Image (cartoon, rainbow, N blue to C red; front, side, top):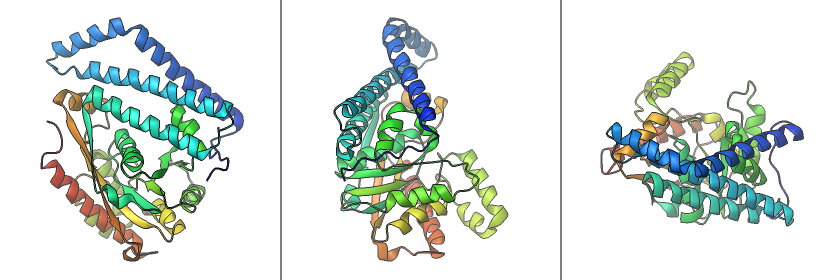
Length: 341
């Protein structure tokens, strides 16, 4: 489709302009300061890392990635502005190409600075579309890897359900809202509008598109897993007992996934799991992982024919069973060669 679109509904126009002005100013300031003071932070962070016995200089590497990311953000915002000036601000093809360029270069920056090496299995499962993709969630980087794999590996275009907090990122805010993505309020008292937005996103997919949702709703870690099981136990003890077998994933939330699937009745389902992002949901975990050396970021996809996916009341149990299988697959991968090298 080439028709103009802008999915941004976060507040009024003034709120959107204010949010974007602040985001761009922060990114621009960080980019300039990091480059201007490179003579200072490079030796200081290197010395601090070496003093702590961190021979791979993880703090230095992370700041190097931050510098690259800030400049890629500015390049993305500049590209979005150029498309607006040339009358292509709402062109979906033009903004998709910008999205693809941004994802490719951020992944390259991650690999170069932090040693995160992407690897994809089952890429053929993603095409042809339309497909609905359910993926586990362990860090912000796995969202990037999923989009990168969809665009660069499968030659598909993703529509992604994301939390509205990510609108602080200027590129995601501007370009993400020009494309048919969905930013949801996870804490909304009434989830009806959020579910309607998710359904609307998935309803008009073409053969070169997929809709991506992370059914866990947040990044997985042991603390969140225990809390999720405890919440479920108050309303559904039997489900809580089954989901207590999870060791790596969180119990999936059914409503968003079902809304997306119901809106695309002819779409097959693709399940995605990944290994290599464990522990990357905190600053300390990121530093530890970078310091440990290069690691594979493996993502694996399996396609399921729509006829095998139950609708209605049977969907929740089906998704739970698939999530237990994904959890086992992640455990097997982590027990093998995937991870730190």
